[in-house]
Length: 451
Image (tube, rainbow, N blue to C red; front, side, top):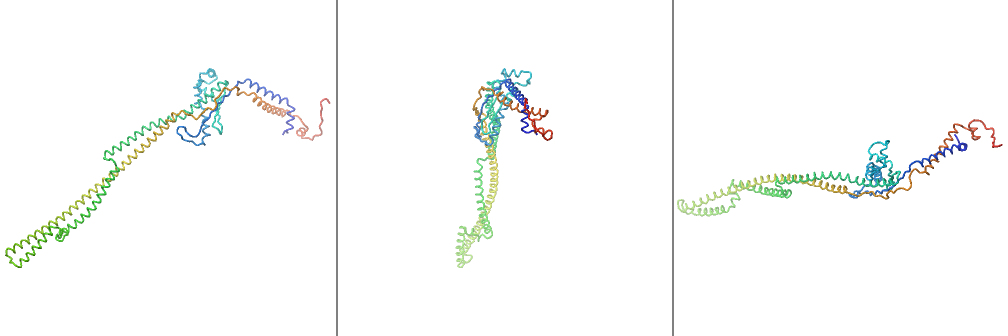
């Protein structure tokens, strides 16, 4: 392994080769820099005013998405769609310079716009800073005016495409909501028509109030039935008493006519008893008193029978009323149950109307919002500094090429000197003799020129 001192001695011995290599590299760099066509780079800066909030809808987005947002915008700037917009706006397809380049036989015969798009994108750079919202667009061309014009064209085209990318999805969504609104409006109308038809078919005006009214009637009927049942039971018991022994029946005994007849009969019987002690059976007064007693007794029995029949008839009337109330109560129960089913059906129809109406209102609201977005002409992109024709070319850089050629010449000269030294190994010092011949060194002779 060669030491640093040995390397220095080799380079000192072969410095001519090293210098020749450096000179050759410098000559090539200078000639190449002078012969290559000059390229000018124009820069334009854009500010992406990304605040995380949509200016139309007000919806916010997480700030963590900012790096991805910037990277996406850089990709959009370098997309063929933006390049096509630049070609169209600047009319580059009609430019004689590009026409001549396109008509060269070596170039592929694809569409001129596609060819121009690929050529422009190769010379375009879009750079975004890590902690900044500024994006720099760089375009290189041999003509400084063309470089500035195309760089500004890319900035303007990106602004337009950015607005289009925001508006196009909104327009598509607006068209979709238009069709959905028609369907939802028809659904609301159908639900309302179904409700009206159901109310008309069953004669329902207000389901809740009608249900409450019929429920109140049902409760009244139930109360009346309970009272009628008690009255019928009592009347049946009294009728049974009257049919069994009318004279002991309270209803019969409380009859005023029967009470009067009983009093008259008691008076007649007392009178007859007094006459029977005084007169004979065949006496006219005796017979008249006896006939009066019998007549009153028969009349009393007849009235007792009539009163007993009246008590029994009243019991039958009350029983009939109870049966009628029970039948009416059953009918009212059926009506209330039917009204309850109708009310549930009405609730379901009303729920369908509310659901359809809610969907219609939501779709209308979203249609209005997407309409604003589709017509929005605002953009988050602002041109910070437009490109101007550069006064100095960006390549080739003569000084930079000379510096690079110098470094490359030193490296190549050193490598060439070491390669020649390896092929033609020579003793450069006393240490080389000991190392190469593996023998002890006896002495060193100092040589002087002219001695």
